[in-house]
Amino acid sequence: MGEGVEWALHTCLNLTWVEDGRPVPAAVLAGYFKLPPAYLNKQLQALARAGIVSSVPGPRGGFQLARDPRKITVLDVVVAIEGAEDAFQCAQILRDAPDGEPGIDYRETCVISQVMRKAELAWRAELAAQTLADVKATVESRFPAVPGQTRQGLHSLRA
Amino acid sequence: MGEGVEWALHTCLNLTWVEDGRPVPAAVLAGYFKLPPAYLNKQLQALARAGIVSSVPGPRGGFQLARDPRKITVLDVVVAIEGAEDAFQCAQILRDAPDGEPGIDYRETCVISQVMRKAELAWRAELAAQTLADVKATVESRFPAVPGQTRQGLHSLRA
DNA sequence: GAAAAGGTACTCGGATAAGACATGTCCGAGTCCCTAAGG
DNA sequence: CCTTAGGGACTCGGACATGTCTTATCCGAGTACCTTTTC
Image (cartoon, rainbow over all chains, first blue to last red):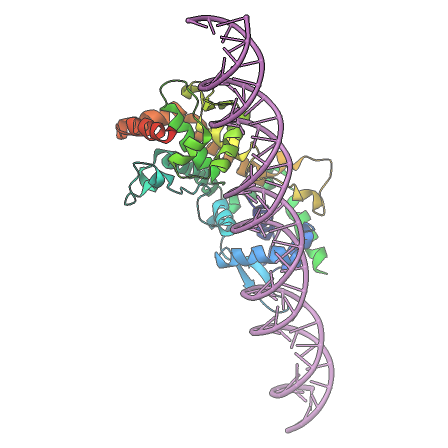
């Protein structure tokens, strides 16, 4: 799994702690974690295409969450970065078996494919059950200082 | 996820249908699915290192299952090919945050890391719940002709 | 003094290189079998 | 006829190219703000 997923998740979480709806530039978000600004910008573009964040160009521009954190699941972010395809891609090698028939869709028939898909479904279900708001609430209950620290950290980088 | 996982799973399943314990050469196993023989050999070596199959060199040599199919889970095969590391690797970028402390192991503290790990745990649990014997039984109940076809297919390639 | 036009600085956005990993291939080490010679 | 030494062929095992995807970077399009000029 790509490293950008971690960056995107943490960045979205940071955006939940920006009080006013003012956009935050990608350079500021990247500076918070000492990340390559241009590359994080690329990931943010993917999030924008997925409708998770909205982008504002020009001065005072940047990125902001496009909708309520309660309506953004962790799975949404992962899919936006990694793509919607399953990790296990059934290549239907049974077609090349001695008794394989080209007309059959082995992605539906193959038992192995079904097992792998079921496992991925469980994975997706876990990620879909956690919203950004859930994660935010958990962090705030365990580390009450984090919201203030994050706000101050982003603000100082904006100078 | 790598393509070799599918090859390894189908190949192990085929090995469950070889009645006697006689080894099957990698070239035969590869020919069954029209796969590159040398590359499948590489994957089989990984399975051998993991103790899933055992290898026999020389004439009449090849690969055979190292233990009872009821003791081989789908997860075992996946781990043998893909490696034991989690797909989501927490790079602990919180250490580079303004208030990050180098002494903390954020793989344990970071909430995002925990969410991702919990999801992967669910994925692993699903794969660990299915043994090769289970898959074999399911296939045989749905497609009773498969065992015979597989045996014949492998035998004809051995000639 | 107020308004408007122009310039400037800042931001995203997509097109463009570099590196890492999975994929694919090759040849050598080791082993067994078959053959043939000798007792 | 039985034993044994030798040769040959077959198999795994790891080292060596290739392709593709992730990672990383750069420059251009667009926008808001600020300055300056004009009424």
